[in-house]
Length: 362
Image 1 (cartoon, rainbow, N blue to C red):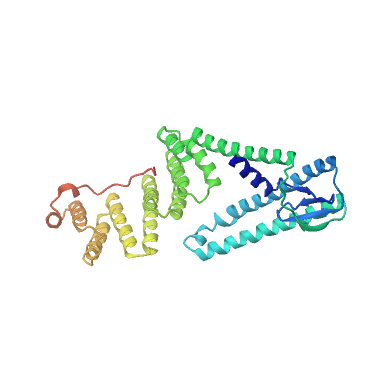
Image 2 (image 1 turned 90 degrees about the horizontal axis):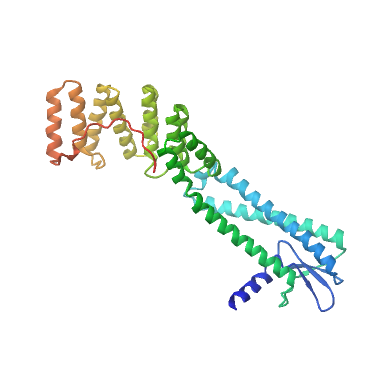
């Protein structure tokens, strides 16, 4: 019983409840964008006229809704996605944008209401603008239309949820394509979703991985760059390292070192700068530029003495020892090895300097 009352209350405040007949035999038509505004005609509309107006009013409401929806889509793809960093972390910018959205919505609703008013005046004569009365009476056809609209919305939600669970998460499906070696399909899937949600870095990261395996190295680098610039979590560095791996696979060492230097120069703090320097030292080791790698390890060990606890001294000494061995500096290598063991007796840190590796964001 309560459900019926709730439905009736919703109906009375819905756009579907679009007309009312007064005791004086006047017809009041509800505004399409303001449920409290009505247009009073000094006559009682016939059933045929009401049915005709019902269809016409529904058209105007649909038109208004579609225009507002399209404006929201335009704002999302024309403003939010291209300028997401402008809104990120700035409540002031977000509130200003929301105010702009409200103004746009009000303007569209106002313009459409004026068009509807002109239409009513032209087709049904002069009217008096008044308050649309709240009535306990329920017009059967309008109430049926209202319930039909609710059913449509409910079925749409069910379909969307059902399709999601039937098809599955697009991210998981793309990962499955990649693990199955269907790289071309993965590129198509990620390209589609990168257009739908262009500020999601995972699409570019996954597409870069797939492009690499199709032989499109430049496309992979470009996508890893996009993912790196969009990412702001633990996967950010993974995208940069993957880009370096692609350079490494191409043997484009010069460009890889330029990429390192750019990030080192633009690092926001000491932690980022030292992290990129450490990665660069390992990269130099892997391309057999041992003297250049040694200079960076020397610098990092000096930095580690200045309370930079994120620089793991025992690991730095151990890696520098490997560089010294490559340079046939056996005594220096032994000294560094002894120092590494002195700082940490746990043998687990004794791993070779890692080679560039392509990682999958999953």
